[in-house]
Structure formats: structure tokens, C-alpha cells
Amino acid sequence: MMKFSNLILVSFLILFTSCRNDSSDIEFNNSQTEPVLHVKKISSTIKGYNIGATGEIKYDNSDKITQMISSSMKTDIIYDAQNRIVQINSYYIDNPSVSISSKKYDYIADKIIVSNLYSGIYTEQMTLFLNNLGLPVKCNHNIGNSIIESYFEYDNNMNLIHHYYNNGYQNNYYSYDNKKSPYYLFPLVLNIYLNEFNQIGKNNVNSIKYFDDTVNEFKTINNLLEYNSNDYLTRFENYQSIIQFYY
Image (cartoon, rainbow, N blue to C red; front, side, top):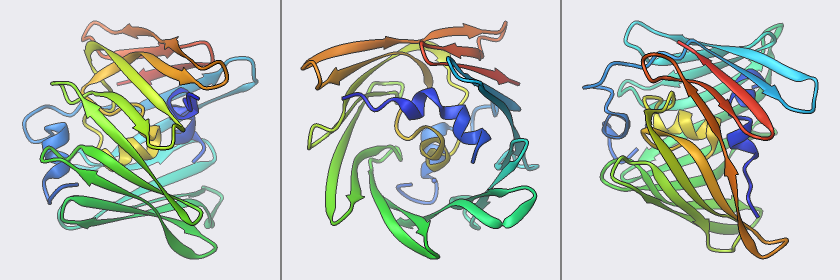
């Protein structure tokens, strides 16, 4: 069955809430050689529900994303001395001592270990195994007392084109446009924090073919994409959500 809620609600997560070695995020998003595509705000509307909000994204002087702010919540992104994200913390603006979520990232050789704060203790959530470009090729997901594996395949633009689990939980194929994704220059772990694994790559997802195990066949979700005069994505729409990007 297609588990696509995080792609549809990508901005919603911002509003309500890097890899192989020291340079792996740079290898993936080419941040040393390409200008930063500054996404200043993202707004999201969920169709059929009275839900909508806007999130603002803050950068420091070196173009690192340091904070995401909605009307009631903030998310802080913390880096180490090697410019790798080591922690992402979300909390209420009017009560910063109350944690909404907190994730910790440990870098060990070709792996990133992601831990989630639960009852005051960081518990390992998943381990990403990376290729020489700093892209995940395998992930071990810790589910209860079990480890579920998922695998990743890419095209020449480093776009994720196939993501599947060894237990059949998900089997997705992604198609893309030829325009630069707003998330392309986000550090890998921040991209995954916001989108899970649904927007890894240089371009924008325009359709997803997923296996629906309730009818035992593949189905397709099509996304309507709109751009500004610079070919930057400004509007994403499918049957559940409308997301707008401001630069």
C-alpha cells in the first residue's frame, strides 16, 4: 500500500512541528558550486479540511537553514563544526520547554544513525547506509523489536526513482519534471525529516506509481506543478493537498 501522507503533508510538517563522510551533504546537494535556492516560506492547505498554515524558513550568513517557524511552533536545526546536522528540535513558541519532537544524528563511516527522543531518552529509529555520493541506498528501520529493510534506486540526476521495503510495506516508483526542486539544496537529513523519502533528488516529483495491496495492483498519483519565470516550483497540488513555495 502507498504510504504517501508525508509527501502530501511535507509543508504541514514544517508548520506543525548530512552522510558518507564530512562532505556528504555537499556531495549530494552540490552546495559548494551552486547558488542556494532560498525558500523563504511554505504554505499548505489540506483539501476537504479547514486546515492551512504558513511556515517561514531562516538561514544564517553561510546559507545554512537554522530555523523553521510557524504561528505557534519553532524548529531549530543544530550543526556540528563540520556543518553536519546533529539535532533537529521542535517546540512551542509560547512554551519552549515543551518538546514536540527531537531527533539526533550520529555519523559513523558510511552510515547515519537517526535517534528519536521518547520519554526523555534518545532511541535509535533508523540507520541510513550511503553510497559514495552521500545518498541512502539502504535503510534499517527499527520497528518494535524488529528491523525492516528498505532500498533505494536513483537516476542520473540523483532523483530517487524506486523505494521499496523487504516486507512489502511500500513499493513506490517516482517520476520527475526537469526543474530544480526547492528541497535539492536542503541537507539530506533535513530533507528526510520533512519529506521522509519522498523528495530525494534534484527535480520535482510529478507522479508516483505505488502498489495498492488492497486491490493487488499499481496505481498512480499525479501532481500538478506550477513554476515562476525562473522555473522555480511555486505550487504543488494533488487530490489531497495544495502547497505553495515563496522565494
